[in-house]
Length: 331
Image (cartoon, rainbow, N blue to C red):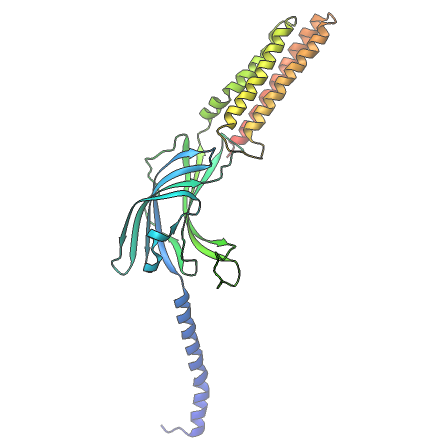
């Protein structure tokens, strides 16, 4: 077939845009493939969690961590970062570079710093977090991908004394840092690093601990409450028991506070002790009123007042305690 010059020009005008578009698309695709971050397939197996220290806001975890990737420059043996860890000890690591990929298996012991929620203590639930990063390569170079397997992520035989594991979640995210870490080539102080996240939700077995910690407070209240059943003539005994109970509650609160981190919020511990102190002070106020009635030689009126006050105070005290305890223990 013979094409004229005019026909050839028409064909070129139609084909040339297609060639340019195809070339641009191929270049864009190649650039995207070149800039795409490498994927680091990551898995974890926790063998134990222990030494939970509420006062110091830390816990210790022993775990196995494995990573699979292709870029040998990542070098997780040297560049592994656990941001919230106080200390990280690598007790074992092995590297396999066969099959054109890197497979690293390491055993770690980490002392983790965390923030505890104590507003409902001892009916609290806690979330323990363990995060893994690469200290040298940001999210433009590598992305963590949790390895999905049929196995568990923790040893079902290990148990935390007084705790039960409610859920165990692994995921990945991009962690943003509003700093350039001294890199002058970055246009603004902003860095993004991929992060492998482990979130462990735990629930405390609280009833035994509750009675163990608050039994002293309730005994102190009952000692003060017993003043209503002491004869109105024994004013010294009634005042002595009430004041002694007051100091016993204060001492009990200091003992509990000594094992908890400082908190600016009003916790269940503060609420129950505050209520008890107010009611013991009310018992003292009732004793003072009874003394004033007794001085008027109105013994029957004083006895009647004691009976009414005893019923009202005990009813309100029990109601408030039950309400706040149930509210705190509600999940």
